[in-house]
Image (cartoon, rainbow, N blue to C red; front, top):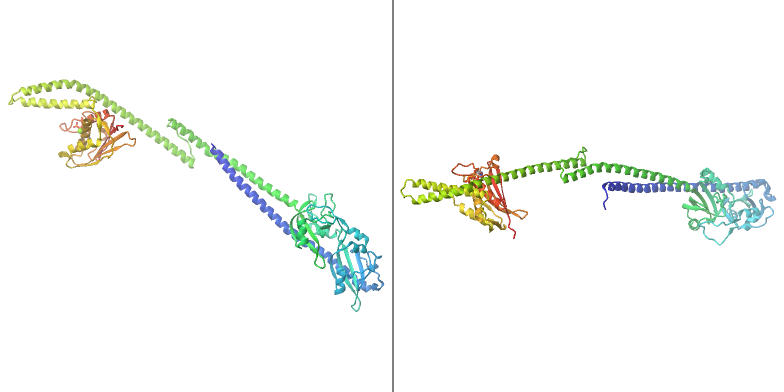
Length: 630
Ligand SMILES: Nc1ncnc2c1ncn2[C@@H]1O[C@H](COP(=O)(O)OP(=O)(O)OP(=O)(O)O)[C@@H](O)[C@H]1O
Ligand SMILES: [Mg+2]
C-alpha cells in the first residue's frame, strides 16, 4: 500500500487524539458518574435517617398523647363512669380503654362495640405486664380493625396493583392495616393498675408522614415536573402510604416492592441502598425494615432520589467531555495537516531537485533556510550536488587532458614513424656500405677507426629509429600466454647483478595466483627494464624499489606497480614524460626514448601506463594489462 507521509502523519495524530480523547472521556464520565452516584447514595442514606427520625417522632407523639390521656383520664376520674367522650383526640384514629384484664370498656372511634378482650394484643399485654407506656408499629387484622371502626377497615383495604419486578404472592389484596400504636397504664391513687388505654393511627392511605418527610428533606423540589424525592411506607411489600406517583399522577398505593428489595429487606432484615426501579422511574433508593414490638419485620421505610437528574448531569458531563475531545480532534487534524505541509513542501522540493539532479542537471540547489533537520537535509543535498558537480567538472577536464595527451602522443608517433621510416632505409644503406668499407680496409688503415665510428653511430641511429617505430606501434607484437610474475623475475635476475643495483633494496609483492596475460614477452620485458632502470637512475643507485602485481577487482585487468624512493618528477615534466626524446638526463646517459617506447608497447597490448610522483619522495609507475580470458 502506498500511503503518503501526509496521510500517515494525520492518521497517527488523529489516532493519538481519538485514543486519549475517548479514554479521558470514558474515565472522566465514569469518575464523575461514580462520584455523583456515590454522593447521592450517601445523601439518600442520610435522608433515610431523617425519614426514620420523623417516623419515630410521629410514634413518640402518639405515645405521649396516649400517656397524657391516661393520666388526664385518671384525674378526671371518668374511668369509673366508663366515659371517654371528653378526651377524643383528633390526632388518633382510635382510642380505646380496657379494664385491668384487657376487656374493652369503651371505644371512642366505635362506642357501640365493647366488652371484647384485648388481653392478647401485644401492646396491651405488655402494659398489663409491665405497667409501662409502650409504642410500636403494629399490623392489625381486618377483624380487629372493624371493631375500632368500619371506616378504618375500609381505609386499610388495598387491592394489589400489578408492578414490574414485584415478588409474586398468592394474595390479591391487603385487608389488615398497619398502625402506629401506643398503650399506657391507667393507675389509681394507690398506684394500682386500673386498666389500659391504647390509641393509634392507621398508616394505610395516611400521607402525613411521607409528605412531611418529603417536605422537610427535599423541600418539595421538582425536576421536570416530577418530585425529586419520594418517600414510602410499606406494609410488608405493599405501598400503603407514599408520594411516589403512578403514570396517572395518583399516589401509587397498592403497588409492591421489587423482589430484590423484598429479599434483602423483608427476608434478610438488611437495609438496601442502590438504584431501584420504583413504579415507573429509576430512583437512587434506600430501604430499611420497620419492626413490630417483637422485632418482627412487618414493613419497610423507603426514600428515593429521582435518578433522572443525575443521569442528565452525567449526560451533560459526557457531552462536555465529548465536545472537548471532538474539538481536540479537529485541532489535531488542522495542526497535523499544516505540520505535514510544513514538512512535505520542502521534502517535495528536495525530491524534485533530486530527480533533476539524477537527470543530469548538476546546477540544482534547494533554497531552504529552516534550521531544523529538513534544513540540514537540504544543506546536505546542496553539498552533495556541488561535490558531484565539482567531481564531474574535474573528470571532464581530466578526460579532456587524457584525450589531448594521447592525441598529441599519437600525432607525435605518426610524425616519428614517418621520419623513422624514411631514415631507416638510408641508414641501412649507410650501415651496409660502411661495413663493406670496413671489411675492405687494411688493418692498419688510419681511416679504419673512423669507419668503425660510422658503423657504431649508424647502429645507434638504427636503434633510435627502431625505438621510434616501437613508440609509434609500428612493430607488431608476437603475443603468447605468459605469467607476468615470471617475466618480472627474469628481468630482475638480469639486472640485480649490475653495479647500479648493488645498493638498492628490491621488494617483491607478487600476487601468487596472478592470471595469465597474452603478451609479447620481449616487448614487455623491455618495458619493465626501462621502468626499473629509470627508477634506479632516479635513486642514483641508492634506495628501495617495490615491485608488485595484483588482480583488479573487476577481474579484467592486472596491475603491475613499480615504486621507487627516487628524486620524483616535477609537475611540469609529467605531461611530457612519454614524449619521445624527453629526458632530463645528460646526453650521454639518456636519449628520452625509454618511456615513449614503453608507452607504445603497453598501448599496443590494450593496457595503460600511469605515473604518480612526489618530488623528493619517489615515483610510482602503474601498468595495467588485460587479463586473458580462459
Ligand atoms: N623513476 C623515475 N624517477 C624520476 N624521474 C623519472 C623516472 N622515470 C623517468 N623519469 C624522468 O623521465 C625522463 C624520461 O625518461 P625516459 O626513460 O623516457 O628517458 P631517459 O631515461 O631520460 O632516457 P632513455 O631511457 O632513453 O635512456 C627521464 O629523463 C627522467 O627525467
Ligand atoms: Mg629511461
